[in-house]
Length: 173
Image (cartoon, rainbow, N blue to C red; front, side, top):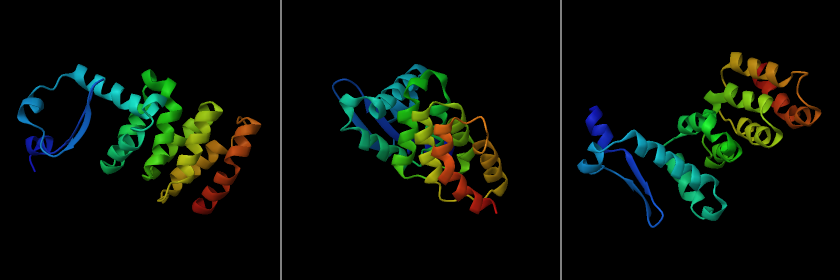
C-alpha cells in the first residue's frame, strides 16, 4: 500500500464544542490535503481533554476505544513523555492499562515513572507493568528489577512495588 493510500485509510477524529465524531476509513481528499501542524496540536489537546476532563467522562470510553482499536501504545507513551502534558500524566498512564493493550515493550519507560514520579503516577505505572503480558526480554526485566529494588525508593513505593518485583523476578530467572 502506498503512503498516499495509507493516509487515506487512517482514522479521522473531529472534536469541537458543538460536535464530535470519529470516522474510520478514507479521509476525504479535501481534509487530507489541508494538514496543518496547528490542527494536530489542537486535535491532541482535544483528545487529552476527552481522557482527562471529568465533565466529559461519558466520552472517555470512546477515546479509549480509539486508542485500543488503533493499537496506540506508542501514541500514549509519547503523550506521557511530553512535558506540556505532565499535569495529565496520571490520567494518561491510567488510560494505558484501561485500554487493555500490552505495553511490554515499554517496561523501562513505566519503571522510570514508578521511580521518578509521585505516588499517584507511580501507582498507575505499576498497574501498567503488572498488566504486561509478554515480558520476554530478560535484560530489560533485569534492568527494571534493578531500578525497582533501589534503596532510593520511599517506603510507600517499596511497599507498592514488592509484588511486582516478585513477579518480575520469576521472569528474569
